[in-house]
Length: 476
Ligand SMILES: *[C@@H]1O[C@H](CO)[C@@H](O)[C@H](O)[C@H]1NC(C)=O
Ligand SMILES: *[C@@H]1O[C@H](CO)[C@@H](O)[C@H](O)[C@H]1NC(C)=O
Ligand SMILES: *[C@@H]1O[C@H](CO)[C@@H](O)[C@H](O)[C@H]1NC(C)=O
Ligand SMILES: *[C@@H]1O[C@H](CO)[C@@H](O)[C@H](O)[C@H]1NC(C)=O
Image (cartoon, rainbow, N blue to C red; front, top):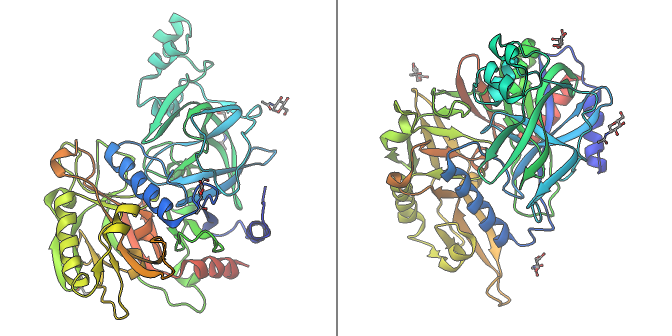
């Protein structure tokens, strides 16, 4: 499966890692499809539109913004069939295409850089309708009903004894596609980790979903939830450190470390200083139980703090509000009023010395954009999470994207910069759901830890590419 020498090297590195560690290290590969996105403008426009679509649906969501997704690979069963999936903290199911596979309306949909063929599940075990995972996949329908759906005999339904009857197929929808799958169990090997009886969805038919997804959300079928039972030594937490993605498709992409479990303080990364995590509590959300939701008190631009509206600080009784930390959405989406206040303050400082680039805004869907002078003044942007000292200073490239624009036909290329935050729409138009999304673009260059034991999310500045190298080196 490794299609490039680089990938081969990663797999070689993985194969020498020892199984005795308290963590498992995996490469998250950043995929970008060159064929569909040959201009920066096109890519930016499509990506911002996708972030919008995902935010507006308030449902299970999928990282399908072409060019800005992180993928993860593992092997299934004794034949070690390779599988590559999108990594998504915003959904709770692990599923992939199974042979024979049919994807409807998939023309032009991007594939990960190393697509895998549909999996042969002839050696995997089908899950029965009595299994709790079957109820979970069917949104808590009792097993007697599931048994009825599986057409088992009446006496079996009455006694809820449907052990020998298979979990009926279930429907699963994302913001921009859907699938019908059945549940199976098999051994999953993730790097040096072997997970027996791992439960996954197997889809023979999907609508607009050509690639499987590894759900890292909070539901019981998600990958971390299953790890908590199948690999308790990992301590019920995971983290990732996203290497900066650039919209320049020519650049060689380095893997982003995905760490299942954690490296100890004493295993301090050699040579580098350890930066403390800044933690903020996870908020419980009965309406969207699979989301990692946190509270945001405000955002500062320069020295001015813009307080966040109440809806971003907490989840209300109906399950609305809060900020979703999402690996599968590209850009951060803020409710309109709050977004406007942040932009106004930003523009007050940056717009004072730089000319606004409306043409670029039109083309990219980003705003505000500026033609930059030599001495540009871009104020620092800090996120103030709920819970005391939880301030996270964003590196400039996480919120201000600079590029050379030559699209006006002339010979002269102009340096342009755009604010990379998105307007998520009017609060009154939001039909409930999370108040905002913290996208992966704003998470680059941080190790983001999901501590499911302590129910908190943490952020620490890191050099993600060298973290990958260091963790590999320290273990060998
Ligand atoms: C980009 O690709 C599209 C379709 O693949 C093509 O029509 C267009 O001319 C290309 N643009 C550039 C700048 O290569
Ligand atoms: C799956 O593999 C088995 C052999 O292990 C083979 O008999 C079967 O035809 C394969 N199924 C598909 C759909 O390729
Ligand atoms: C896996 O599931 C089978 C059948 O349900 C069971 O017999 C076996 O003990 C399980 N193995 C593990 C390691 O849990
Ligand atoms: C914030 O940090 C200060 C100094 O590091 C500490 O004394 C204080 O207890 C912290 N507050 C909270 C709420 O964590």
